[in-house]
Length: 387
Figure (cartoon, rainbow, N blue to C red):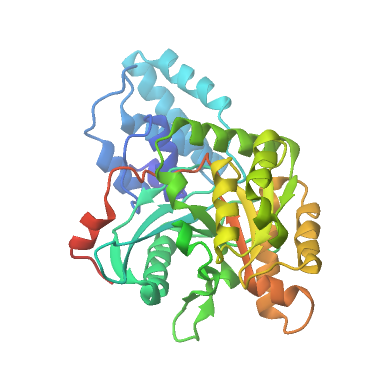
């Protein structure tokens, strides 16, 4: 414990690294390194004979800020392994880590699933998850709440406050950047709520005035139905289309009002060419535009943009085209959309203001899923939960 406490360590990053080392075993969030050490001290050894407490010190070494602290942690782990006759096992662990890289596109993130309670009331069930460390996807579930759409903002604000306690200090070096949000909020919504203005939900700090969520946080929309599906074909198409987006960039299959008369042909074109990786369409508030979005989701599309107010005129679609063209990789699109929203809130003039205020941004990454299969929202609605 003395060696561990000899310098500062990023507690949340250490927790996530240790969970990865232990093959996904559940570890509590919010513990300081010495508390986490005590938590795992009595745990059984791993199949190779190494105890989790020893692995914790070994994973802490590269996270230490100072060279002396790093060396002390490494030497402690080496000495223990040598005495236990497990030096080769520890060496193999370290070699296996070399090939593991962090994904720069995985953010600190609050995931908020919203689903109607389906009990004859206007209640919705809100289920949050928190991904606390950028670069590694390991979201931890929070407590569900039952509220209404009018109360969705306070429910999200409460979850963000929990996230702020767990995220702790500043982002890792290189994780931020000018205009990049400190964290993202991903709303997993059913079809009939995808056009709800979640980016304008407000958060509040201290005694300041409430501010729009999209001003500080990157806000994405995701499909509840697709997240919950166990249809292997749906998931395969989702992954295939996302892979094409990451490998080949954005290729838009546009939809506009006249396409409502030939929706079958529009979907057939999308299905027949997997090079299409995004759709730009009118707001999914009308029947035909909603059917187009459902068809795009069925065909695996993970990137969609629309103007929430209704028809998406060509001149505003050109702004979206410019946004897509402005980023070096598709993974930077959420950053660009966040900047568009932020500028719309900060600047009272300019052509980007209207679109930034009203843009619907669907960013549904199949590599970042949460477990939505086991809980019926009706069961949660019957539970006592804070509104």
